[in-house]
Length: 95
Image (cartoon, rainbow, N blue to C red; front, side, top):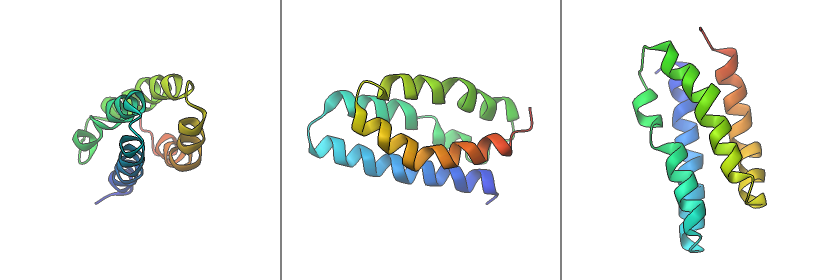
């Protein structure tokens, strides 16, 4: 598994932990936001089309951040857990 794929696995891991936490608290809007963020990640693992990876960073991540901005605890989580992973994905970017 290459480094980019490992990063996506980490994003899935952290996201699933957050999804479980907000589901336990019955915060359905937060569940929806996290599920929307995570649902395409499995298809990016092993993906050779660099434009799909660029779309994730350029479009899906900002959309996710826009939505979590309405829930401060979700924003803190995203910045603490995901931002270092997103930064590395940006460094690995090929297009």
